[in-house]
Image 1 (cartoon, rainbow, N blue to C red):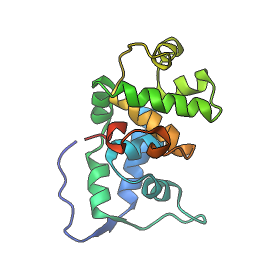
Image 2 (tube, helix red, strand yellow):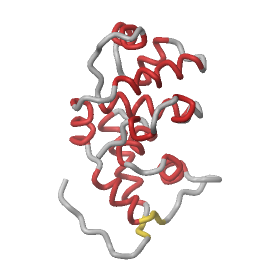
Image 3 (cartoon, helix red, strand yellow):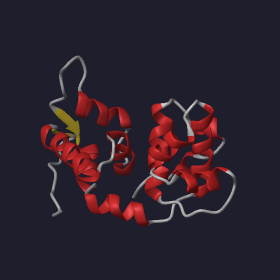
Image 4 (cartoon, rainbow, N blue to C red):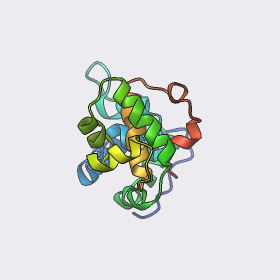
Length: 162
């Protein structure tokens, strides 16, 4: 993706960024919440941008969020898939998801990990974890209202993307 210079105002037109997120979701297969975490944009902002409120989508978006969304592309998602992530925080989030009633198969699907690897991870064993898996787990925890404080880990270790 080529660099685009955004206007210096605090707000920009939302429609192109809504379209870009929809295209990214389609191209990468990642849910909107994962894209929000990967971009470093608050999930409520992305939810509102994509789904709107009372049947109406926003016409404008904060420039800082637009810039972060614009930096996100399939190559960034692919890079996150291949970069090592924090397995200890992934383990804590997997356990937290399980304690809220998610099955092992559901947790594996949420985080994009084979169920056999998940069993090893949750059992305290060594497996390779990616930053994307950590972001997917973080998004799944957020969807179930599990907070970092609930996990007993620092928010920074939950894997914010660059």
